Length: 311
Image 1 (cartoon, rainbow, N blue to C red):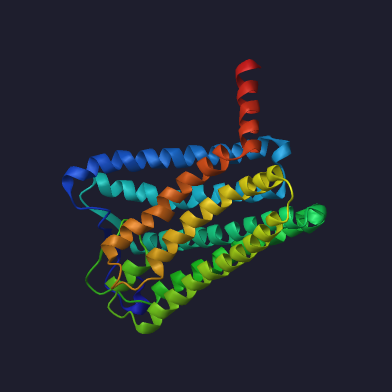
Image 2: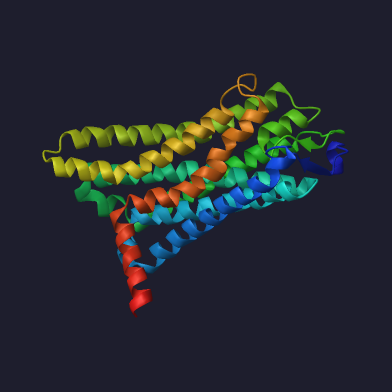
């Protein structure tokens, strides 16, 4: 660590997901498979949206960015995690650890706020369809995206700055498969109540603001759907929102369980398992959720495949 905070630790050892030798190789291939599915799914969705002009709408602009965020933050975590399964010591420098923490926090915050932007988009589309093109103009979409990445940057700076203020004395064994906030707080020799409260406040903001936005949006959406006369219209409205509700539940449910409960309730070893859901399962699941349940995406996929095989 930098000399100005008198830390004697210049590198960390990531314990990984498990220390049982018999599980290392099977877990390596399992998570390698997850990563391949995540990369192919998210890059495939990015390519599909980019190549099909009928998907160049606000809804798919946000989905494009969601796929970019999912691909990016899974790439920040999984490659280093895979190393822990095939090496005796998974060593990461202090600089590397802080860099991983920064980008992990950046993309997780971005995911929180892109999901809230997507909920607002669905609210306008269903509750104010006649004003949709005006309300969700390119300028508004750009403003929302700048807000998403701005919140991501702010959250990453706050978390990383909080951890950089800590001193690490002799112990450098991080009880995790990545440089996460809570294991680093536990490892430091000068973490205080203020550091822990700072983490809680930042996480509560990063989860609370998007969740309130999403709940309000879907409250208005459900009210609007209840006034739709035809069963077909209600079914179409619900199917439009179903994918987003599933993605939101997976992401915020696992994130809240991992960070907003006291460590006495969830030990770090169990917390490691909780983080698997939003760091690995969610980025892998989102492309499947949004493609398998979306008629426009499935139609675009069929067109792309037919052009490839019959051109």
